[in-house]
Length: 246
Image: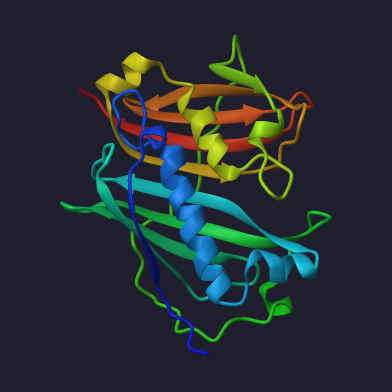
C-alpha cells in the first residue's frame, strides 16, 4: 500500500469556529490541524485504534503558528499536513492553512507517543510507516524557548476543569488550551491588535477537577508570555502570543 506523504482537507469556516469578529479562532485552527494529522496518521498505520491496542496514544508536545491573516465565517479553506523524518522520540509535522487569497497560516509542530503510564515511547519501538518523508518545512522556525512569567497578583484567567474539556484520552484536549491562553486578553485587546503568531508548549496533562490559573507577562511591545499552573504548583502549559500593535 502506498502511503501519501501529504494529505489535505477542504472545509468552510463555520460560525461556531469564529470569534466575536467572525474570524477563525486559534482553537479552531488547532482543531483542523488535529483532525488532518489524525487522518494522515491513520493512513500511515499509526492511528488511534492501532496505538490504543498497544497501550499507546499520540500527544502534541509543541506547536507554533504563524499568521498572514485569519479567514472569516463562510470562507473556504484548505488544510495540508506532512510529517518529517522521526527523531529519537519526537515526530515533527508541518501544516499549511490556505484560503482563496493563498497561504494564510503556517505551522510547525512536535508530537510524541506515550504509554498509558505517561512514559514516552521511543520512535525505534514503533513500526514506522513506509512513506517518503519531506524535508520541506511549512515555516522556518526553531525558537522553542518561551520566557517565563511571574505568578503575582490575580491571574489573567482561571477555570476548574469539567467533562466538557475532555478528549477521548480522558484529559483536556490540546485545542482547549488555545481558548484558555486567549482568554487572558480582553475583547478590546484582541479587536485592536493583529495576531501574528502564537505557540503553545504542553507541559502536563490536566484532569477533571483541576483548577488552572493563567498568568501573562508582556516581554516586549505586543509580545506576551503566558503560563498555566494547577493547584499543586505544577506548570501545565507555556505559551507565547505576538501581536502587531495598531
